[in-house]
Amino acid sequence: MLEGILFWVFSMGLMLSSLGVIISKNLFRSAVYLVFSLTFTSLLFLLLKVEFLAFLQILLYAGGVAVLLVFAIMVTRVIVGKDIWQQSRGLGWGILFGLIFVGIGFGFFKASSHLNFSYPKNPHGVKEIGEVLFTRFFLPFEILSLLIVAGIIGALLISRKD
Amino acid sequence: MNVPIQYYIYLGFIVFSVGIVGVLTRRNVIGILMSIELMLNGSNLVLVSFSRIHGDTLGIIFVIFTITITVAEVAIGLALVIQAFRLKMTVNADEVNLLKG
Image 1 (cartoon, rainbow over the protein chains, first blue to last red):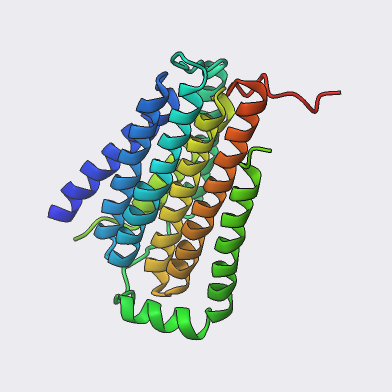
Image 2: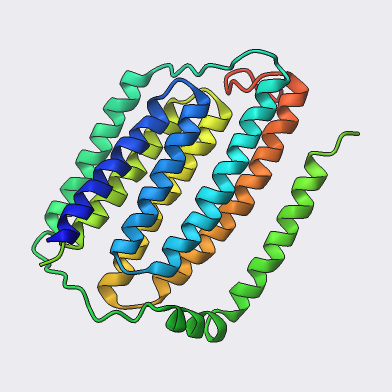
């Protein structure tokens, strides 16, 4: 019962925050709405009992990606010397397409609504994630670290002044 | 009884479609990047709920990898945006048309 109430509160917060990201005219407010929606997603992960992913989402997404976005907004704002307000042209057509898209998707969901899913027993603790990550997915793990190093070097090379 | 797991999938799909509308509608490049973040967020939610349905840890590993790759992609994307901004002095997606023939 508490989980039901919490689910509706978090899902309403997530939907309103994501609508705020795309509708808001001020770029800083879009970034703050994005932080809110990432935090609400992390709380939904806590409700789904995957605590490791909830903390990872706060750490990397809300604490890394959103801060990088705010830095980029500040850099591209200061150089010009005035506020860059956002214009969204064609918002009506965009919303119409979005409604059609959601309608088609929910048509697919309705076709499979006879399936009855039940929550299984939960093998998703950090111990099980670590066991799978370091035995079965060890190669992608190492390649991921290579990719991060390549990303660092690439970002440094791109933004050099020469 | 707890919430049916289908609601999490519906919610992830709604967030994903809001992100798609944002990518199509925004004129600012950083706004487009934020809408891409929203799309990835929605798909992460769907992946985690499917992982909970089948009791498989595979979905969670996938989300871990996706989050890490997204962080690297946002860093490089913002470096590109700042470099293009130095060249053209605008962040409007309509005006970055140097390759136009």
